[in-house]
Image (cartoon, rainbow, N blue to C red):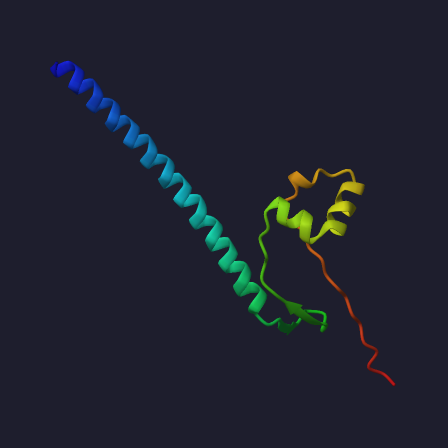
Length: 108
């Protein structure tokens, strides 16, 4: 009788431990994703920072956005297609930069 109670108690403890571990891992995953989204929102709300480069050109700088692969493909499908046209697997990319170079003619 005592062994049966001990086995049931051990089973309950193991079950609760595994459920607690699963919930904790889910919590950490959600916390990491929440931090990523918070940083993205603050980056989107930031203004561009302008400074002059060594060669005298005016340069604008902004923060980085971090996307999941599905978010990247849905938001930047044309860029994803260009990457695939280069025969690069989109799953393997770690960063993508897209910049615009504008030169003004100051002599008139």
